[in-house]
Length: 368
Image (tube, rainbow, N blue to C red; front, side, top):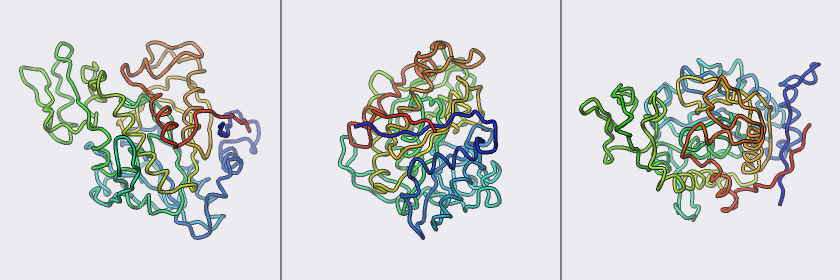
C-alpha cells in the first residue's frame, strides 16, 4: 500500500514561501498535529553534530516544530544519545556543550535539551520486538518513555549504512552504547597493502583496539566493537568492514533497532527529512565535506520507510556535483551512495524495514 510523502522545494519569492513557512506547511499537511496531545512529553529526535561539523539541521528550523507542538499544548524537548566512539558527544556533559555550541539552546529553539541515555549511556529500557536478530532491543529510556516524537533527520551518506535518514537516526540515535554495540558487532579489517601507517586511526578508537606494528595498523578483533570510527578518519580508505559477510546482517540489525523505536511509540511519530548539504559522511564526523548533489528540499511523512525511500530516490535523480567526493554516478538517475562507500548496501534498510512491517517502500510524493 502506498504511503503519502509530502515534499517542499527550496524556491522562494515571498515570505509565505521561505523555509520557515514551508516547514510549518509540511507539518500541517503530514498530519503531525494529530500525533500529539495536550501535556505530551514530546521528543524531537535530532543529531546535534560533532564539534567541527556544520551540516546538521539548522536550529531555527527546529524552532518551527517546537512552536507547533507547544501550540497543541505538548511539552517538547530536544534529544539524542551519546556516541559509542570517543569525540565531543561521548558523554552527556560534552554532548550538551556541543549542542549549545551549535545553537541548540533554549533562546533559539524554545525547548530544553535532554540526552536520552543519561550521563554515561546507562539510562536503558529493553523493548521486545521478536525479530530475526533480536528478541529485545536496548533503547534510551527517555526516548521510549516519551508520549510522542518528531524525528528530524539530515539525509546524507554514511560510511557503513550507505546513507542515513530517518531509519538510521532512530536506530543508532535512540540506542545507548550497549545498543549501538549490538548493532555494529562487525569485523573491521585493515588492508595491509594500502595502509601507510599514518596512525590517525589509533587515537579515535574508543576501545584502544588499534595499534601500529611495523608501520602498519592492526585491529585487535577481541577488543574491536565495530563502531567504524577508524574508517571515517583513514585518509586512504585502507580500513573497512568485512563487506562480504557482514553488511547484510549489520543493516538488518540496525533496522530492527529502528523498529523497536517505532513499536514503542506506535502511531505517535512523525518524520521530517532535510535534503540539504547532502554530504558523503554522517554528521558524526568532525568535518563537513562538500555536498554530492545540489540542495533538494524537505520531506515529511508518518512512514519512515517511505520517507527514506523518497529521499533516496530524489538524491539519485540529481546531477552529481563534480567538486565532491563522488567518483561515479554523476548522471541524473544514477546511484550516488554506492560510489561514495563501496561495499555498502543502503537499500537493505528500506527492503528489510518493509519486510518487518515498519513501513512501505511504495509512496506517493505530494508536492506542496
